[in-house]
Image (cartoon, rainbow, N blue to C red; front, side, top):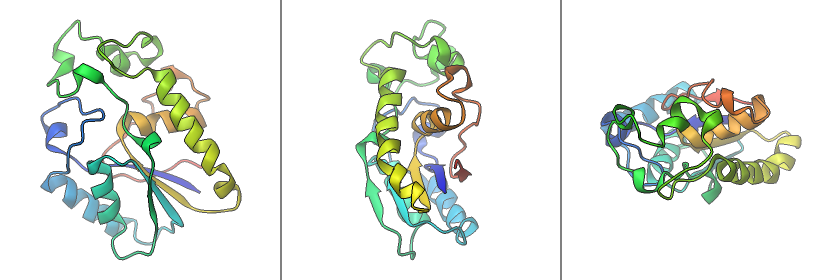
Amino acid sequence: MLYIIRHGKTDWNVEHRLQGQTDTELNEEGRRMAREAATEYANIHFDVCYCSPLLRARETAKILLDGRNIPIIYDDRLKEMGFGEFEGLKECFSIPDCPVNVFFKDPANYTDPQGGAESMDSLFSRTGDFLEEIEPELEAGKDILIVGHGAMNSSIICRIKYNLDRKRFWDEGIPNCKLMRIL
């Protein structure tokens, strides 16, 4: 089985700031969410956890798996999508001409990132490489947990469930600390 979960809340989530690959930590609500998820999902078996190396995901994985003998392996390919100079921007949806808004509102037409932002092709490429690498583990029957981020998790879901149909990129919704079974 393949499971995926998004990190707990951060102050930047609360402030509606674009985080991307900026290394923010969980806030107290995010830590509480991770503890609640640990209780809620305590009876779900995981053989291994692959995790983004960003602090908010690392904290979530450690809290979620505390007391369980499950290895946590950090992988750069699971970092959140990079938004370049737009990271830290507050309330980007209130800025009509902000180019990253297309990614959130109409991902199928997000083709020319600006300001050092990562392309969807790049995101799909790195998460696809990751999935190919863990495929033998899944085929061997291992239960794998991925702890990641909204856009990165969506890219994995979009790749597996929707054959990379970018129109469906956000269809599943990616709430904080809610476990999703993908395969």
